[in-house]
Length: 153
Image: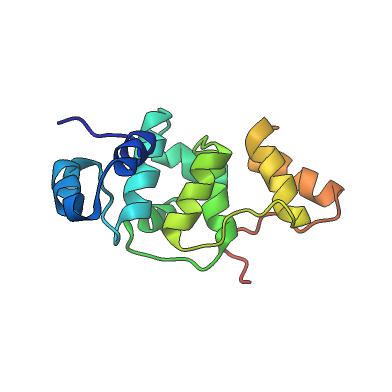
């Protein structure tokens, strides 16, 4: 059976009764994310869908390749949301995909009422260029640029 996207699953769930939950889960096993590996599976699929090499994502995100591979594989975990945002941006992910990736990683999603997050949301929507360009827009608006992996929060 082919993997279903989130919209398809949500439509099916609207008509699923609680007593049919186990049947739903069994029928859609291929479409469900492993809670332990949800982010890692999601990010790999997104990068693959966008036809970008992981090496280029890490280069564009300005993240050391070795560290990036460890993050994507789940071997390492970061508490820095900016690192995940850099990876998502460099991977060509949409704002919606990025929000989902942040949620899967257990990090706060971008919030429109926070100035910095609002500018980042605009950047994800408009794609003004590289991470350096995103940081320039943040600085231009007197906001903190996206931190690199070497900068601790």
